[in-house]
Picture 1: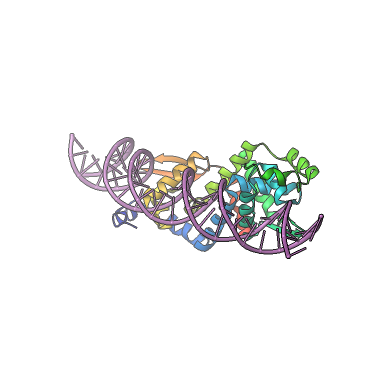
Picture 2: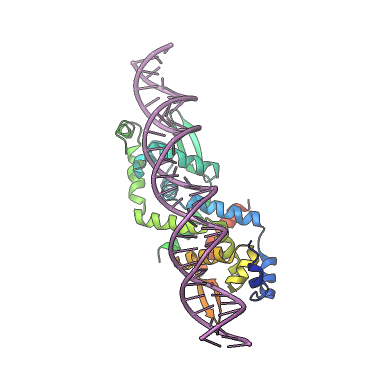
Length: 118
Length: 118
DNA sequence: CTTTCATATGAACATCTGTTCATATATTAT
DNA sequence: ATAATATATGAACAGATGTTCATATGAAAG
C-alpha cells in the first residue's frame, strides 16, 4: 500500500462505520474461498456443462457433442469441476459418466439465473 | 471442431439422452450472461467489497482502508460492479457512497457461502 | 496381444484480468 | 483563483485462464 494513501485514510474515513463493518466481516480466507467458488461458475463452458448435468447423467462424449465443444476442452473443464467437488464421476467400461455432486450447485445457479432473467 | 471427433460422436453418444437435454437447455446467450455474472463474483477484491456493503453504505476511501486495498484498485472494481448493476452510488460532496443495488446479491453470495462453509 | 475407442493429461499459446502508476476531474475550503 | 481532497480513468505490465495439439492411459473387441 503506497504511503500517500495515509493522507486519505485519516481524513475522509468514517471510522465508526468502518470499525463496525470490520467486526462483521468474515475471515479473509473464507472470502477468498468464496471468490474461488464463483470463479468456477464464471466460465461459459463450465456453466453449460453443469446445466446439462441438471437433466441427466452424461458421458464426456455426450457433453462434447451436446455443446459443440472439443472432447479435450470438456475433459479439462470436468477435471476442474470435479476437483472443486461440483460434479462426481462414475466409470462404466470405456465411458465415464458425470453428474452433479450436490444440490448447492442447482441453488447457486438458480439464484444467478433469477438475476440474469430480469 | 476437428474432423476426427466425428468418429466419437457417432459411436459413443447416447443420442436419446442428448436430444432430451438439448431440448431443455436454455439459450446460449442466457448461459453466457450467467457465466458473466458469476465472473463478477469470482474475484476476492470484488467479493470483499460486496460483503462490506452488506453492512453499510460506504465511500471509496472507507472501503479502501477497510480492506487494505489501494484507492485506485477499489475504484476500478466499483466501476465494474456498478456497470453490472450489483452496486449503486450516491454522491455527497467530495464523497461517493456505494451500496448494494438489489437483494439478489445477498442471496447469491449467501448460497455460495453455504457451499464454502461445509 | 494388438487394435480400437473413450477419456485424460501436459505443454504451448493467445487472451483476458487485475493491479499499479500517472494523471484527470470535480468539489470544497482558503 | 488556488490549493487540497476524493474519486475516476487510461495505459502498461504481470499473472492467470482456457483452448488446442500431441500424446498417454485404460478398457473392450477382434
